[in-house]
Image (tube, rainbow, N blue to C red; front, side, top):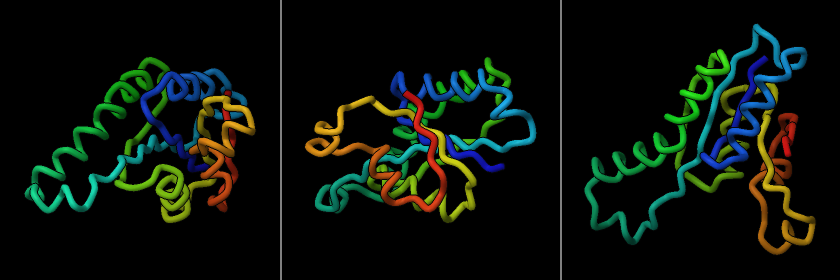
Length: 140
């Protein structure tokens, strides 16, 4: 099974990784794990003044700030994981990546907002649920 772990570097990212590592009966050997982060795009009007290598380096650095600690944590859990990133709105980018990369399951953390907070503030988890044709497991 191909399992996608959307990550943002928060405590919820670590909680999700801990959950996957501690539930061996559900997430046993034989699965592939991809940690994925969506990097918010630089506004177009700002990129006009920056050359492409600087913009690409910025995106790479932002992704690495999230993915590097995750790789270390995955090693401690003996969890084989690959990492990927893309530029875009988090929920849309996660759902598109899951679809395009033929993921079988998305396992992601939730900040645990109430339903009213989700209506007012929005939620990446809610957005992924709305956009994804892949099953989503929310870890709280």
